[in-house]
Image (cartoon, rainbow, N blue to C red; front, side, top):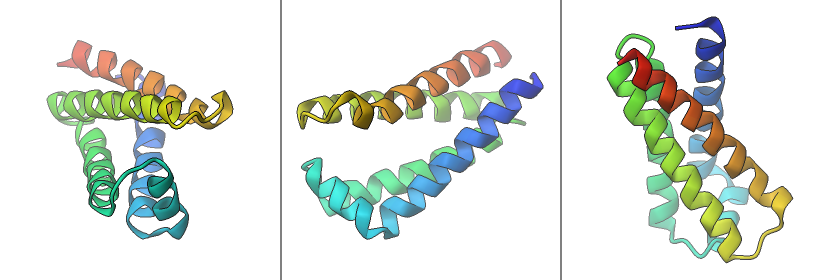
Length: 116
């Protein structure tokens, strides 16, 4: 596992941990999920998945199979997020974070697969 991979993994995990807690607690995120056409239950479930996925990425440092599942799950989550952004007619700048995180997590998925 290279230092670049570890750095990317940890930074990604921190971002999703932050967004997970924001999804659960932030009025801005509550408003965003409403704008996305999602329920409070879906928002809370997404936040819990983000927090659990962050833990899974970190666990992947010792257990690559767990990291593989977490990174693949985040890749799928960000694909769905991108589709939602298109559906609600957000512009490319608004959709860009989902694309970037989808690519980062795709890269992590491949990296974990090679380690597994």
